[in-house]
Length: 369
Image (cartoon, rainbow, N blue to C red; front, top):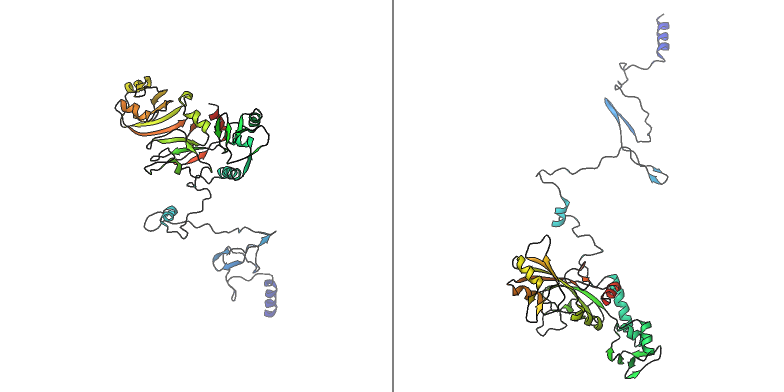
């Protein structure tokens, strides 16, 4: 009977799972499920006694040539505050040179780049140098390069017999001349140099002449690389006066801009040693008598947002040191004098001591004045 009971019990317990209290079996952790030892698509599964199941970082698997994103990527590390209480600032270490690579990154467009290195100006200089290297040149182009007129207009002048080459009247079209030949138009000798117009923002301490007997600095040193031809300053600015000044080899335009009959406008920013009284401002507007006569001022006013010792004055006369003498006549001393406009030209976008070549539109506007 006992044997039958034991065999029956064995048959009844065959379908049951072993209990946790049976000998030779390990107790299962609460809440845990049984897992196979095979690798899941997210990585290997680990079971630890009494601890919840965790996953390790999955392996990188390529899907269609691309890497699969990790579903359990670790978050980025953040800098913690140092114990000293100072915050980490990479800029401070960069300035002190404590970083591994202390050199500054390469800047393709340097702010202090040479003023004569721009692409447009280089192309203009190359064209001028190529035309300058030719031994002979057509007569109409010779006349056009002198700045008198265009090539078509030069052809008409040649046909009319108004041009002489080495003392002989030339009416032949396409006539070739050399640079050593003497060409005369309307009784005045001309040169084959192509007109060049350089606008300079003159700094303090430079003289607006081509040469100086006392070996002082001149504006020619600032525009030495501006043109293959020799240019000359149009008008003059004092050594201590700053601002816009034009340099060119166009003699006709120079005469036009400097002759008193054309009344070219010039605007100055004046800084005085003390405030300008309203009565003195009105007196200057009416005209101050100097050695040459009455210095007529087109307009004068205080500058908005500036103290009363800074004024703007517009004149057309070209007497020597006329602005300084006007204020000295009333007992003021000019501490700073800056010319901000000459004719239709301004110093906008030109740093102090830098220059630029005038555009064709600006040249045409000057010739139309």
